[in-house]
Length: 424
Image (cartoon, rainbow, N blue to C red; front, side, top):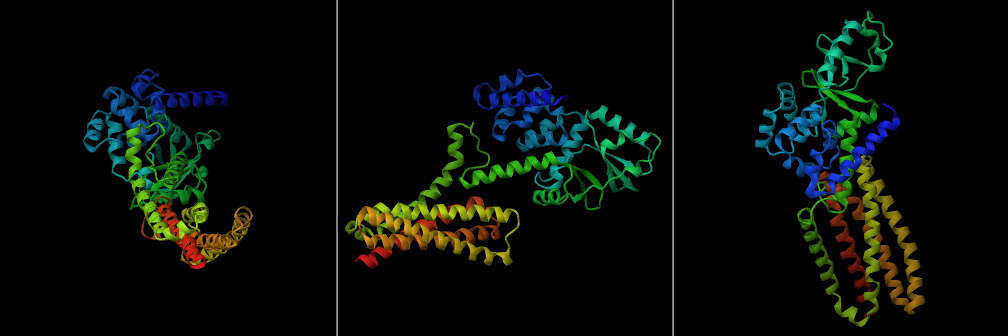
């Protein structure tokens, strides 16, 4: 297949996925109008929320036909979307071979090495010939329509694999042992972060999964890891906005409300806390109305600075660059950056206040409040994500709300508190 043909096929799938995603009432009709060979590919490219909606409406026969054409691990991922009772009914209708494979894969946590692995491999003894290997490959391809990963064993234990491209240059009577290459291995219960780390440390297109007795369970391919990474990046982006990672732009209004309302209620509570802080100084504000004009500057600058610090911290935590040894160094630098940025912005805003309002006292108060609030942003933006990680929470989703509350409440408290002390 030429590169232009592959690109055309990708564009076709993308257009179909877009069409299904944005036509809620005609999803099933569009899907069933597709050629049967394209349907499995479309299922793999749909967002989870759209996929759930579509397969819940598909006739059972059509769903089973599509599942039969997928890799067992991909079919398992789709089947696991259903409730347990429905999963059992669907599995019972599969062919005997796929049924056994799906049952085997369903035993594992989806976010462990075993949950990510594929069963598209064959085992061959190191003393076998290239001729024996080719025979095994043909049998596997005829049965699955897929070229397998070739794992080489000695007395049942994995010793390496045969890169597929080397077979084309080998003589049929040659022993395969001269073509054995190293393949990284990982235990079945390793979590997906450990799998990702292994792929980064040893750039390979595949990793073998072993059980506790070092028997081969399956193979993880690079495209499976890329899928997990994409899902995690998407989840982090949604978490920053306080949204569910399951929400899609194609969801109905009712579904969006379901995903968002809890976060909005929490945000309302923190906004009220900031409002009550301002209420403590209502007499000062009534005397000096100019304070109310510049209050959003203090809160806005603190919030923006905190978000910058949080983004850096979350990335550092994800890449494991931050620990108890480096935390003090990171905090010191963030406070230093906050102080310097605070001074720069304090001078700018003070000059603006003097130029527009000719009020040196409020210019000084606003400038000092900005410096202090950017220090607050650096302090909480550094420590809260680390604290959330220690508590086992996702810092991207849980830290934002606490940091924003700190910069809003403390920002108003410092600004209005200084105004009360200096202007009264």
